[in-house]
Amino acid sequence: MKKIAKKKFNITNLKIDKQLFNSIYLPHLFDYSHRYNLYYGGRSSGKSFFIVDKLIILGISEKRRMLFLIKQTNRINETIWRMTLDALEKFQLYEYCDFNKSEHIIVFPNGTYIKMSGMDSSEKAKGFVDIDCAWFEECTDFLEDDIESIDGVLRGKVKNKMLYFSMNPISMQNYTFKYFGFDTGIIPDDTLILKSTYLDNKWVDDATIKRMERLKERNPARYKIEAEGNFATLEKLVFSYTAKKLDVNELIRNNTELITLIGMDFGFNDPTTCILSLYDDKSKTLYICDEIYQKGLTNEDIARLVKQKGWHKNIIIADSANPKDIVDLRKMGLTKIKPCKKGKNSIISGIRKMQEMEIIINETCENTIIEFDNYAWIKKDGEYIDTPIDTFNHCIDGIRYSIQNIKKKARILTVKL
Image 1 (cartoon, rainbow, N blue to C red):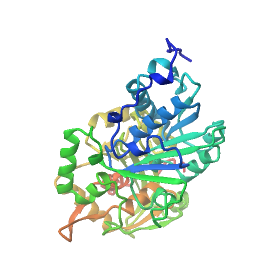
Image 2 (image 1 turned 180 degrees about the vertical axis):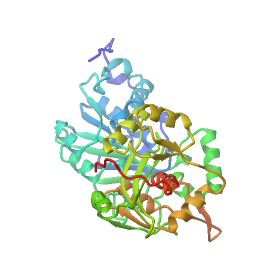
Image 3 (image 1 turned 90 degrees about the vertical axis):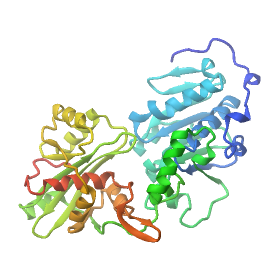
Image 4 (image 1 turned 45 degrees about the vertical axis):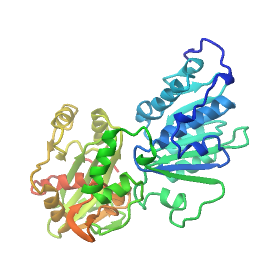
């Protein structure tokens, strides 16, 4: 534990200036009466920053044991850790705290303990002891089991144990829609739900405002999700499909003519996806069998995950927007990865080809199913136009790239599911 504190802290030195907070959040700054606290809405609304501020003020006012969580461990430093350090600087508390950067632990002068962690598995909850407050950043990325696991280990000595959640809503198919009662509109007495948008954030920059204004004109459907923070609604969907349990090895045994298709869409703040499908050219059936779907992946991470699946021996058609990524992945063992071909109307062309197929999705491909349940045509002036919304398409883009390989038949050499 690295000692940073140089002088003794006195709580009377803490000055809370109302100007440090957006007015929509200020009434809730000292309200710790709810066990469950959901702050949701559009991007750039400042909700995550407010939760950090609120919990730091709580922690410096009374001794607590807190847990700040993000789903992917490799994103701790750039998200919850960075936000917390910035908040400590803002409140002039940094010099009074002790830090263990390798373990992502902060200890306040009064003994308050904050542990930051990823939660790649619900089993991690068993390792957290005497926690009395937890925050789930980007809680749509978690599983309901993750939430229940942490809720079950809130056993600290304090009376008001609390869970905090921050999210930008995505699909009604995501567990959060029902978990927080959006399906019924019934909010329990022990739950606070507050919605905010970029318009509630007095610090939002001009570039973000202009981007949102352009988005409202260009893509109203995406504006409702990204800017207004609404859950995606089931409009006129682009694809129909069937979800069922698939046994890939059995499919291969029963049909030796199946074509292996693997497509990759790059992301970092957005998820990187890699989708394995099998295509039956005779019946025009596309079997979507397995997925990689994760935010914050480096090229090294991507190569490792693809190799774990055994897909690196196959042709992979990847997004061509960043040629360097493809070159790097070839050097890391994905020797058959190739850039997709793009051109005028390539998105619509790929969609039309997929619409000619019967699509069957393995029920284990949860993220792919969510996208198919929400990938819809844009509605303009009451009519649907021949343009899909530019969201819920990371898996779908990977699949769309992969079908460019249909003419090149290649058997799966190794499959790990």
